[in-house]
Image 1: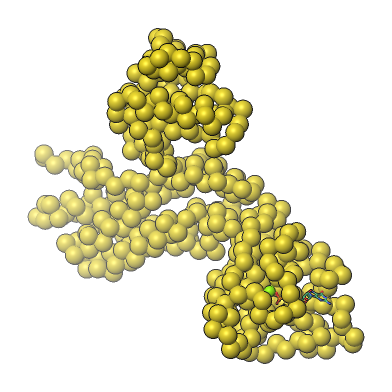
Image 2 (image 1 turned 180 degrees about the horizontal axis):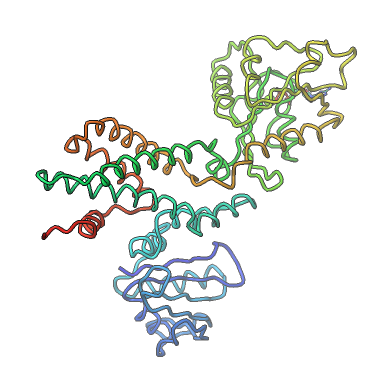
Length: 443
Ligand SMILES: Nc1nc2c(ncn2[C@@H]2O[C@H](COP(=O)(O)OP(=O)(O)O)[C@@H](O)[C@H]2O)c(=O)[nH]1
Ligand SMILES: [Mg+2]
């Protein structure tokens, strides 16, 4: 099948780029332009015509990339037309007339690139991340990933396991032959080293995922403390309804912010109180869940009525900033127990000390992101495979104490496989290759 799609954003623009990939690409260009193919990789001006009537549709620049030197590895072309909706749909319509051509599915060009061995799975993911990056941090992370540091590391670890797997497989295949002492040592050494390295990689406070998905801040506290006012003030727009009627916010309201390049998802939640109303109760449960999953909680209370018992005490235990609001209404000093606690005293109404609060949030973000240099994991998918790998390696090492390879080999195979799945490599041939390289079977 040959696929085609608009590769630039939808909507009106100066120029729109339509990509075509597959066997029929050549035919598509010839039919649309009624001319010979342009030189490979040379931008060439060509008129695009209606295939049947030869009526002019638009003037375009065409780039022709014969496979395999193309993004997808197949024959490919880029057609640069003027970015009007009618132009794009007319060109799409003409391409659809060519047999075996259809509109591409989401991500299909990149999927092709992966299937044709042009890129690995991590690179495919990083391309998607780069496209959807909204902040500088996200862009930097995606481009680091694109350079292949993680892929290199995971491949290195996997090769270490493949090496010892080949010894183990050989022992199973030729049980009468003794494994050299050096090989037995290497089996233990490599598996232990890989296990420890992965454990270290996993101990990253999930920074990579947080950067990709956004740092989650939950605003929580009793009804009427000013939670909705705070989200509006931080996002500088009206995202939540502010009212003196307690219990106004029921659903969780979320908004994305860019704080110094850090992607932040901030959510306003229902005020926590002993509610009678069913819907409000549901909202309160959602609040508590949000708080639990947040990377940082802003626990906001009315300064003249601070009661930090019960749920508030729990919320403040970790990853939390205590915000005392409505300082404009405060008649007397804060009590000594409150002053002792780390807090920010603000008035959202009078816009007092909001900068202090923002600074505290920023410091918290910076502490959390300190480790960013070393992170190799950017998705839950990677984490899950690494965890599986660790578990299988642990099993392998335990069973292997008795050098009972028949029982432990499968654990080692699965550990290797999970590492391979991160990068998108699962190939039996490779294990065989490794065996033949290291063993002189025909002796
Ligand atoms: N005096 C005073 N009132 C405030 C302040 N911040 C919010 N309010 C008011 O407190 C009420 C409750 O605010 P809201 O943001 O809806 O509270 P929520 O229930 O926690 O979301 C509203 O009438 C706000 O205008 C403040 O700093 N000072
Ligand atoms: Mg509210």
